[in-house]
Length: 71
Image (cartoon, rainbow, N blue to C red; front, side, top):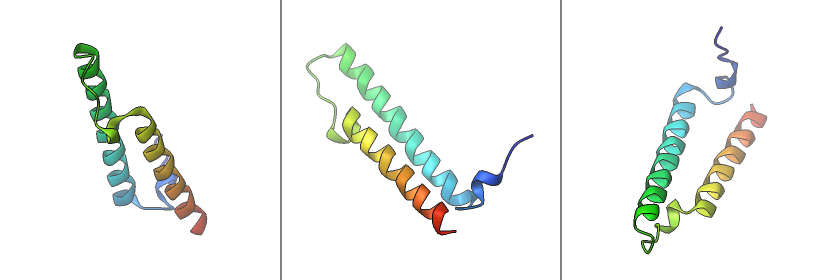
């Protein structure tokens, strides 16, 4: 059975928008990594580098945690 309780604190729309944003970020950074493998001298854009992606993921999860604690 699917558990919908993880959506109670923030709502379906907010959850879906964050999921789409993070999925797009991860897919784009993966594609940039593949291009970097094929063309080694090409540098990924700063927003798609591993540290920037990790920072974005951490920031989004902290915002989510902060929102769920307020409710």
